[in-house]
Amino acid sequence: MGLEFDLRTLALDDNAERAPSPSPDAEADGPLLDAYSASIVRAVECVGPAVALVSVRKRRGTRGDAAGTGSGFAFTPDGYLLTNQHVVHRASAIRVAFPSGKEFDADLIGEDPETDVAVVRVGADRLPVAELGRSSTLRVGQIAIAIGNPLGFQNTVTAGVISALGRSLRAASGRRMDDIIQTDAALNPGNSGGPLVNSAGEVIGLNTAMIAGAQAICFATGVDTVRWVLSQLFAHGRVRRAYLGVSGATVPVQRRLQRAFNLDQATAIRVMEVHKDSPAARAGIEEGDLLIAAGAVPLTGIDALQRLLDAEHIDRTIRLSAIRRGRVLDFTVTPRESH
Image (cartoon, rainbow, N blue to C red; front, side, top):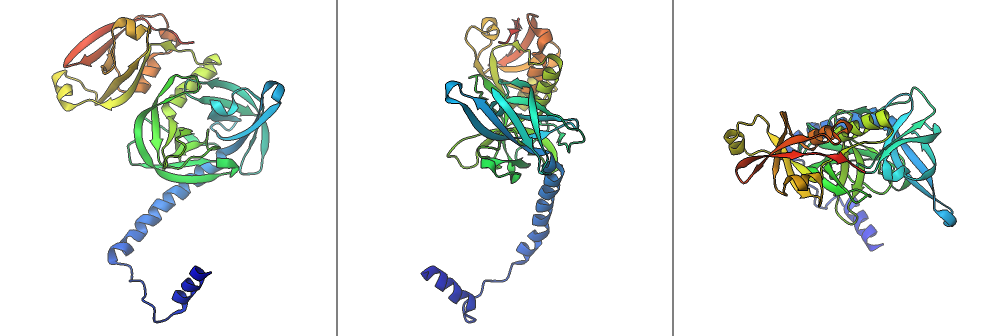
């Protein structure tokens, strides 16, 4: 009560010291703030209608069913939605609800635990859709907008920036997920499977995880990876991969290396981990190597390597080139099928 009384006194006292008038610089910032807000509003108006609340029931054996919620979004008008694999894995029933009030039962079409991506379908057409953009052109510092259903609060919007690119996370399977986007757009349980959007209203990532107890350290799977997984799920019903046995990050190539080795590419892959007894380990690839090419194809990033390691390259020999301690080394590797 004392605080309330003091505030009233200050508000009503004509003799109280008044706040200074806005400086010319502050007034000049007004249009900039309006433009920032307008860009977020436009993006949300574009993508928001396509974002759904995903409710699931999962069997727990003799303990009965468990209920859970997450997010998802339509990316085709004929009923296909993207979400996280961990949201719908082992679901006995899936139901999605859109902001329009329409609700549908959904079927699981395909899932990939290695990237935490899943596709479900509802029996509907002419759905509002979110347009898939590109993640290969993202830059640290650009606007990032998350839309989802944290803690059951439907169609919640948070905004921030791209904090970092090329992060790695452990998937539920224990494997490392590479080329992850870090953002400070706040995520909470229930945001999983929702879109991360740029200011143009294009999906740049699939919101995947956060660090509990941290201050806005959140992660999304890049949409370029999502696109590749979608192509595999629609073609094979699952993702068939050629397994190399390395985890890595996309990094800039120093100019001195570009000049020394006559490289046209500005980025390559830093090997962060080599799995024991893997094809890469047997070929002699080591942690710290900078992978620059596969045959004549430049390896400009993790996405380029993932595209290379498709089903066609299972048990087929490839030649990888890497820079190690100032020298270019070539390695002959025969990827096997990932299980």
